[in-house]
Image (cartoon, rainbow over all chains, first blue to last red):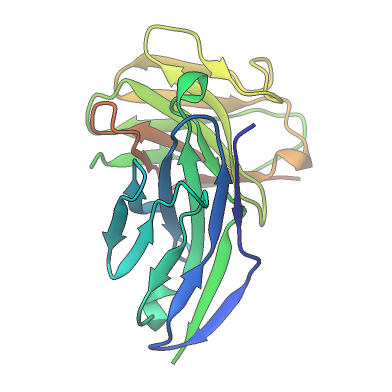
Length: 114
Length: 115
């Protein structure tokens, strides 16, 4: 079945450090890929998305590139801020009968210190 | 994007009782979804609720335990029936927005604690 694997967390960084959160997936066909973020005490927000190979999603300084050859969608940010502290979820929607079903990774807790 | 609200935002319930969670969207949407996020875990899809048809449940979830209504294009309810402490979770509704764009937006969630 479809699955998403994220790097083990939690991740702790100092402000202005470079961030990478790894995400790999298994899916039939050509899935759409997403990163969602959950800030403390808030709901789940869409951060960025990519719908086909080599697409790059970007938002708020975060980027992720859809790599079909490595089945990956790693999240990166060049300089993190304290306000980026949150839980980050990688997710996919596969095609066919799985249409509409978001499959999530286990989430990665990011803490950024001043 | 759509604005989604949920009621209640949180509740504490006794074992054996039922709770109905409401999800309201400010625009008409075809596809609505209900997810569960158990403590410290990721999100799992419970069911897909399309207006005018029966909800479609994922493996491990059954209608008797999680009955869903979808009376119109802006509203849905999820009931958690005969609750046990294992049902303590955050329950979230989401909607697909953008006409087949695959993009889902989430409500703020309902935090349920069962004693």
